[in-house]
Length: 408
Image (cartoon, rainbow, N blue to C red; front, side):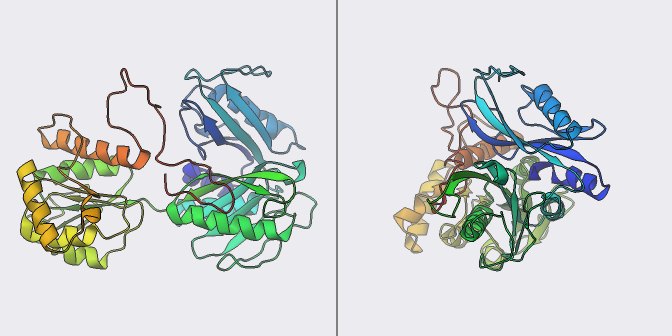
């Protein structure tokens, strides 16, 4: 749902009634992951996608049915190669997807939570929505919002005593899912952990907030600001990498100590162009587990102090350009500077996958391919003749209660 936050937020502000279909779980070669959404308003306008086209028509009909039935409640549907329901629609890729269809009317108990989450996501703020997607019928579709500042609001069911509350540092608050109070605290803490890594997925939990009570499945959707790509070295290869970084959804910064090269005119697609020594800039700039660092300077006076710092930061990727000879020489210099073998093992150098790239654009594609493979757990080999999944992540998208996986 939060992947189409900007459009849905506009619908909420305009007072539209709509139904939103959200991918809850996938198995096999499903085209889109948990959190992908298709929304349909009362006039039949549709935005978003849940399958890249395979089951859009059937899901569109489900959304229209949810809007036509004034008493409708959230419905969980499964689509796959073995479907035998009235829609009898399967995925051409052979996978299976579970989709939750939720009507959102003016009086819907979850509308305020959805509105707050969509507004935050549309503004680029960090927020996570946790929704019950399977379990006791009276809890299905109930939602809890967690913000990056540790505050949360929650929704109850129509006619219930559910109220909005405030949660600080995942502590106590009023209202909630309307079940056991420990459920709210546990889900809020788990959702906060998902939010910290920008991850969307499901968790299994008991109705009483632990392993006790009826089992529940909760979908946690996270919306976070774009991940950062820091490109060090204002060279022609950097210009191509900036463009592909923006295409992949990164907030891209170019940094170089040479003012004649580090100019906005040379990098019009960059979000920022910084003139500073790379290691000094990295010392003062925020990074997280999604940040990628691409070192294109291949000059020891820049590379060594920069990489010495970079390889000790909790970032997703550190790559450095240079020939194999440059790589070996740089490694020796880094060892002399105190970098350990374990830290050196994190360095992707020479940077990029073996595509036979020569031009700046081809080289940028090589680097971007390695970044995606590193993020998703891909092998980088040709899919032709391979026996590996087409769609897969480095870690599972599902984490049971009490155990949070790493960023996918």
